Each structure stands twice: as structure tokens, then as C-alpha cells.
Image 1 (tube, rainbow, N blue to C red):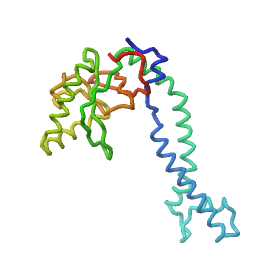
Image 2 (cartoon, rainbow, N blue to C red):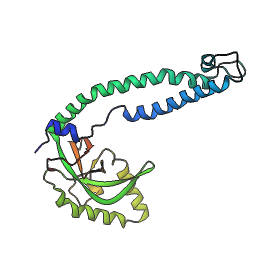
Image 3 (spheres, rainbow, N blue to C red):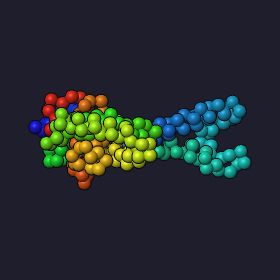
Image 4 (cartoon, rainbow, N blue to C red):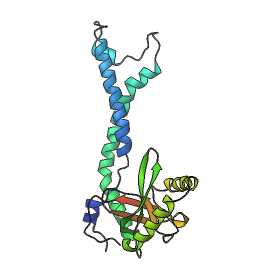
Length: 226
């Protein structure tokens, strides 16, 4: 049984395109803007003949030449913050349409899966993420749990060199999800593995081995996993 559009909108986490970038870049630019404001304000005591705005727009160094660092500090936030704001607004206005398109993909080639723990973690960047496998059509979570536990036991017992190689192979794919194949021979080869998504036991899987989207679920859905 598939979720309705209202259910999908309520529980599926469809990522926003610019949210992460806008948060990081916007925070950096805002800090630079505040730094320049503070610097201009503090400089008024040493330059009583100059207005705040005269000092705010200064881009020349002590030698009287234009300083590229000051140009970036002064003009970067002023120019880029409005652009980022526009991108965020556009993203907000178009997000609902992307959710609807994602739902249509879900109807055609998607299912609600249960995340089955393997007891393993791999390093991705600076963080450790939990490795789970996803139930699917014809592969209920109850049938996968024992095999997933065997994967965890086998990999945990690997020699250090083999374990590092296994972790590296999984780490390269885990964020987008991948068919377990030879990395987890205890499981049917087309079972998907991924990093744990969200805080609930469920995830939405859309697509196949050629292109897969895995979405976190915000709350326990009324529809049973496939």
C-alpha cells in the first residue's frame, strides 16, 4: 500500500536544494559583515573627521593601495547576501513542486522501507555513520534481521587491513545507498544498504540500482513498510 500525497508531504524529508549551502555561506558572510561593521565603528575614535559609512566602505590598505582582502571583506557580504536570500526564497517557493515530483517517482518506483541495523559504523569525513540495510518488496525486515546481524559479526571480526578496505568501499557509497552485492554476501545482492536516515526506523526508497533516492521519514507512518 502506497502513501497518499498528504501523508508523503507530512512525513518524507525531501531535501531543499540550497538549504545547506545557504546556511553555511550565509553564516560566514554575515560574520564578515558584522566584523566590518565593528571595525568601522571602532575606527571612528581614531578618525573623528570621518563618518561611519566612510570607514565602512574603505578598501585601501595603509599604503594607500587597494587591498583585495578588504575588497572581499567589504563587498562580499553586501553583494552575496542578497543573492543567497533570493536563492533561499526561490527554493522555498519551488520546494512544494519538487515534493510533488518526488511523490510521483515514489508512486512509480518506490516503497516505504524499514531500516535494519547491522551493528556497524563507518567513517564518512569526520563523522561515523551507522550502516543499515533496507527492507523492500519481497524482503521484509524480519527476514533480513538475522542476515544483517551476520554481516555485522563477520565484518567486526575482519583483520584490520581487510576491515579498513571494507569500510572504505562502503563509505564511498553509503550516503547515496547501494545494492549490497559482494560487500554483504549474507544478504540477497539487490538489498540496499545506506547510512541510517533520520530518527525513525523507516525510510522512503525511490528508484533502482541505476539511480536511487533514499529519504528520511519524520514520523512513524500509518502505512506498513513494503
